[in-house]
Length: 146
Image 1: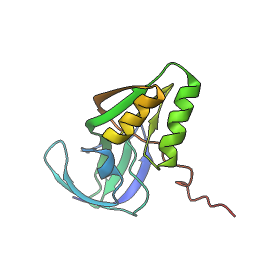
Image 2 (image 1 turned 60 degrees about the horizontal axis):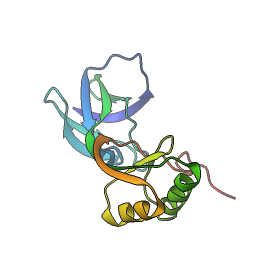
Image 3 (image 1 turned 90 degrees about the vertical axis):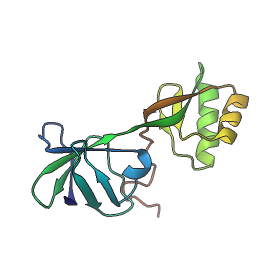
Image 4 (image 1 turned 180 degrees about the vertical axis):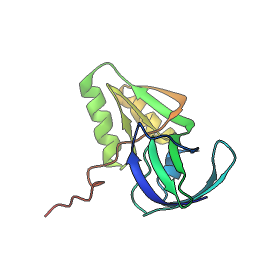
């Protein structure tokens, strides 16, 4: 089954197949995978626009395919105060690290050097298994600075 069309987040749309992708796979415009039902799926989409968890894709045969996030190993770091948390986000952002940000917690791909930095800044760090959905970034919607 080949996919060339994105329909976006359509929560009420019935889907025929489900593909479960890691964050790295969702970043690719072209990939080959297998649906949860065992059907081979080939994705041919524009590059530079990550697939969203929950997004519906339309196959050339007319079937609808839902994208789900795979559980993968990530680092989760958290703290009790906003100042410490803000400093951690600043330092990671300065290094262009992909982050999923919550209420005084963040998740990122595992990296022992960055984890040590977070501990030194005062955060609690642990390795967990979770669906990783990083922030899309300031320039992800095609805006540019003039």
